[in-house]
Length: 163
Image (tube, rainbow, N blue to C red; front, side, top):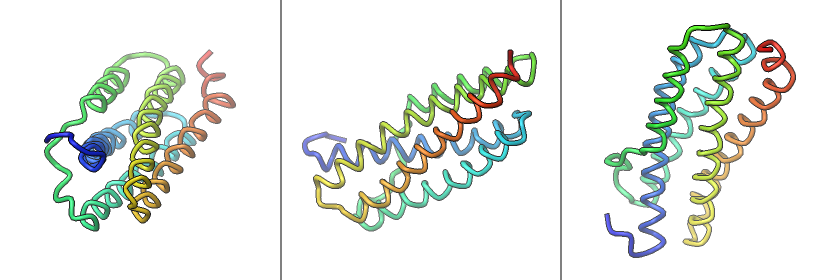
């Protein structure tokens, strides 16, 4: 794909996020199974459902804007983040320490997503795609809320258990 306009970049970034969300969705079920803390497990499970909705929103945007399929691009950053999380899941050790590590891995994912969604919201607004900006903004807020939930769990429970 040639990047000759903000529209081209917008589509490329949507494809990147679509690939990332699909990779993260596939990994989250495995993460949920590996978590020992019940609150963290619930948070991961809830976010997995949100991720599925976020994928649907991206598909809806592509359809509404006649962008075609968002498939065809592999988000290399997501691939790396997922690989790091899988390495952590394979480690032996104290379950509480692994939970703390899982939170760190999940927060890296959330921060990547927040950066990506913040960017495409700005692009959508500049391009006059207000409905797309609204849907993408909803996803951005969900990612921020998940990050806040993970921080709260780490600071109040998980990190103390890992000491």
